[in-house]
Length: 252
Image (cartoon, one colour):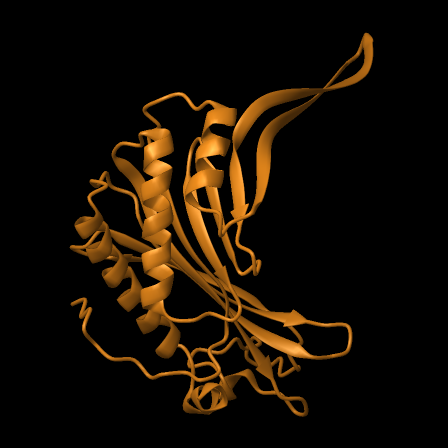
């Protein structure tokens, strides 16, 4: 497979992206001081005024023939910060084990999304002194509203779910997951297709695409940009090759 980062994909005026995420996991090379880090965050990124401190907890349960059941909770301490923008559409997590940046609906465009994710990543590196990256991923969750009536999934998906031969019954839901590897590039793709059914009978087709690489890579921004463009190509290829012309027309 050849990754063509300059390939043009169809523009969607009704883009179904409900959440776009960039996640980076790396080794933390310096201890965090919660209050010092919080002060720096408030000073450097005032456009993210909502800051939630995240703590870790552990729940254990034990029981034996000669002792009553016992459960205990342990506070594992400070784990990071969850930063939320003024409009509550952008969320970044600065954790002791990972960094992530999310854009919620309405999604704007790739350039703004990836640029803001890298800007926040650079501040995260200042706080954590993070080193080599062990996992780098892009995840896009798409939700497509399906019209009512006699619904046939084959009208919307290239590879729709089906019942066993001889058992032609109507499908009211499904969950399908594929895991793929991209030879020569080192990427993996998790692709989930499922249906979300609401109480009023409305159905949403969910296409959840997670592209990632797990080998050690440098945190140089030029290298990260190259990986981002390659992962963008892969997630777009999965999406547009999975939907039918009818679905595409719904989104344009």
